Image 1: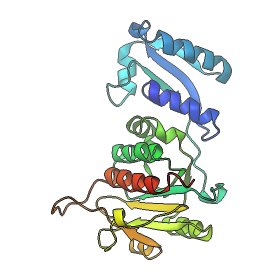
Image 2: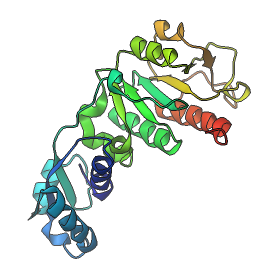
Image 3: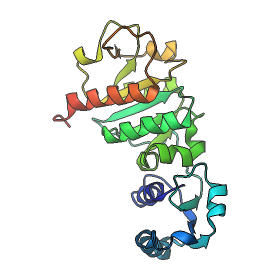
Image 4: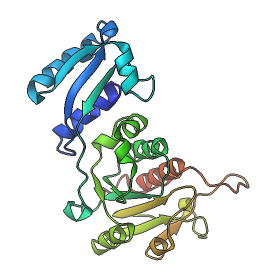
Length: 246
């Protein structure tokens, strides 16, 4: 995990019982001790409680372990996170959950999670093949939201069926529907499914939808929005419609 924002999110997610990822060791650039003094003081207090080591190293070692140069001179070596199956989840009665199907880039995936978290989504459902194996990249691009979200795995069809059994409306983004997002009432509880730019949502999932909505464009434009942009627009409109009804 690179940078203090990601590190803080790992700690906060663990404290809240949202995920079981543990910090094993913090590495920081010895040339940035003064700049990182406040953060290191806080981390030393946490380390006494959680039992991880803090070690100063050369900048070259941090650069060799990191993917970019935006780490701010500090990173954490962490354990893997357990992602439980959906059948282990305690699903809220009047909640808002999202499944992102078919995103092919971990940065885009992280950007989507950032917006979904800010829009008040209660949890994320992922297929068993997902980008959480690139946890550091996803944490950075999501501003730490990936570590703060309850996340579960399920086959897409089984996920849709499970939420439908709990009385949720299954809402899919679909460019071929006549129903526009701004003119469609969407009320909690909602299970929103957003597809990737290339493959979209599978036909089997679309057939299970209670509502299919499309995002209106301001001009003629044949390209699809990025999955992150579509997820942001959809989630915030659903939040807007339900903000006084939770």
